[in-house]
Amino acid sequence: MDKLKFDTQRDYYIGADLGTDSLGWAVTDENYNLLKFNQKAMWGIRLFDESDTAQERRGFRTARRRTDRKRERLDLLEQIFDNEICKKDPPFFQRLKESNLYLEDKSSECKYTVFDGDYTDKDFYAQYPTIYHLRKELIENKKQSYDVRLVFIALHHIIKNRSHFLFDSLDMSRIDDFEPVYNQLVMYLKDNYDIEICCFDTQKYAETLENRSLTKMAKMQLCPICPNYLA
Image (cartoon, rainbow, N blue to C red; front, side, top):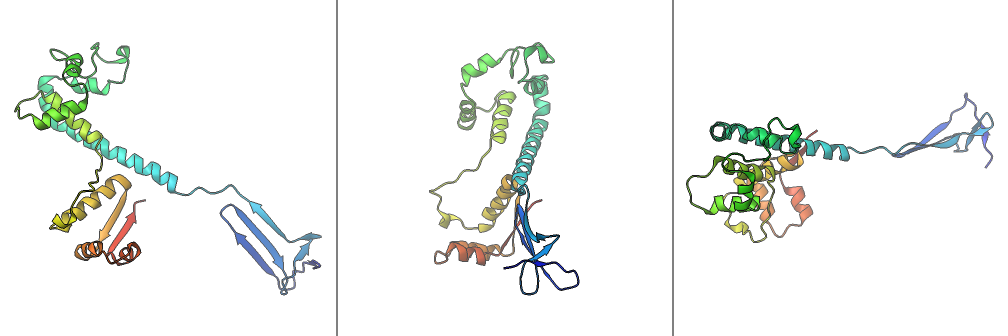
């Protein structure tokens, strides 16, 4: 097909093919014959650097928010224990904050990381080889009085390393009220994935989930729930 010369006085078409990292274009007459301008065919392609999606940034933002919320929980725990621990060991929190520093960089000359005085780190690890030994004893032992620092350390570990557990043996038929379960789901999604969900009818939501005759796709379409991804 001969390429026709471009005449600005006549009608012509401009076609474009837009991609994520390229742009293809062409100029033709009304009969779709490729036109020329300055002896050059009026068609071509331009390549660009592939654009990035928001998924990676969203992942960083989610991790940052999760870290911020964890820090807020730990700060609140410290505020709750502040008075009692200051009575027992005033520099306790300062040693914790400087636990990752070399001795010469610490504000005190204490060689221990957590405990000092009549009960040191050496005594602690001899009594509790791991933090889980301490947590187990606090749960199972009916002793009424413990060193408040031990209680703080155990709760600090639980809050800092909290997770979500799935129970395969959980019998859903024993759940009498769906509302508390739904509220836990809402809190879990918000805390861990920055996703807010809004259910217009929790009873219908529960009935849809329990209906074994429906496929997953059908349940997704019937569930009266709206996810809102936080920006």
